[in-house]
Length: 294
Image (cartoon, rainbow, N blue to C red; front, side):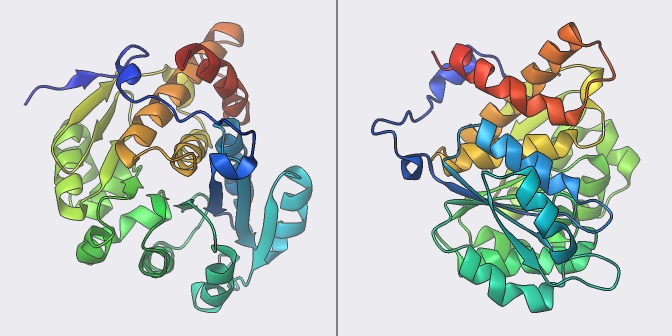
């Protein structure tokens, strides 16, 4: 099967839902579950990106030690502090009940940025998938690594899941070596999409986007500057913002990858090919949306 090249022109096949009444509810509610004592900023990057992508409302759930500062850093968000482990991660066993109350009314959830414990994070994601059968999900970072053992639970969510692994996370998901994934990232993405029944964004210098039906898209890259700390958190945030706005998972993934990559291109031109920061990526998104969705 041939693949499509992801461009601004090809995105016209996936038009964005545009607000008509000016209500923030019309653009959907996104929740970001992420951050830890050692990586508190990941949830901030993702949450800001979700708002820049046009989500109407944002909730951030993070470790209690980071919640107050998060609320000040992102005053647009409702922020809740979750019980944490002695190591500074989210204590999934104690956080589940609180999270289930907070997720009421959320259209799209992002689980993973800055969460530091793979297995507990995966189980927390699975609990949320089961409890919220009508919501869309993006699973990133620690939430991805252990999914291979719980494939059927992900498949039960009927295609409303996007995963965004890099090569190392994909290797853990499939039980392969990282070198094998890097040698054939498309094959890895296709295997993961078939296993999980999910849309897969296989991150790399060039990014593959595939869905469970076998559609394959290639984004040829936004430049080496995107290989920087926090860049993946910004990408995940853009995707969850698109999901909150009502896009189907494949469309949300395509828009997210394109906007993230083109933001990198713009910053490479204005700042330099390397050295721009992940926190600068979301600010480019509204301009790109105006131009691309016109």
